[in-house]
Image (cartoon, rainbow, N blue to C red; front, top):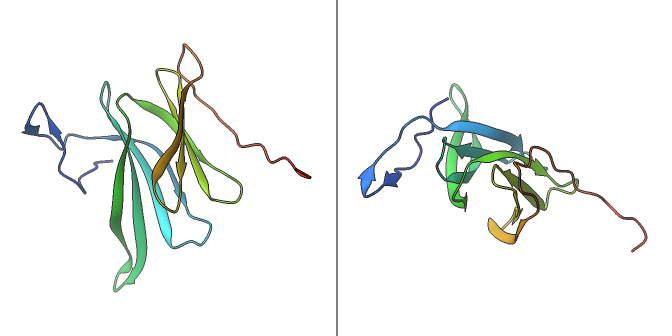
Length: 126
């Protein structure tokens, strides 16, 4: 899949080479799609798209793009209530992004190896 919704530059030169898509999901309200795009040995971007009806199906309009990390991401997960998005990276970081504002709330190095899975835990009664 090619990622061409935004112009990216590397060392001052525009470059829209192919990006790897590391994750994709719908928001709980089904009005948005989130896409995690990364490239080998390069930055990772979280893109929020609006979903709108179109003549030939559905149109996806990019609303915002967040540079989540300066290295490759390995995956992402949405919290059960849809308010948070976690991003896992190849250099051991966990990032928590607030879904509504697309702002990074937490960035911690939690491991020395790539993090390939993450899960939100819901604690009841607290």
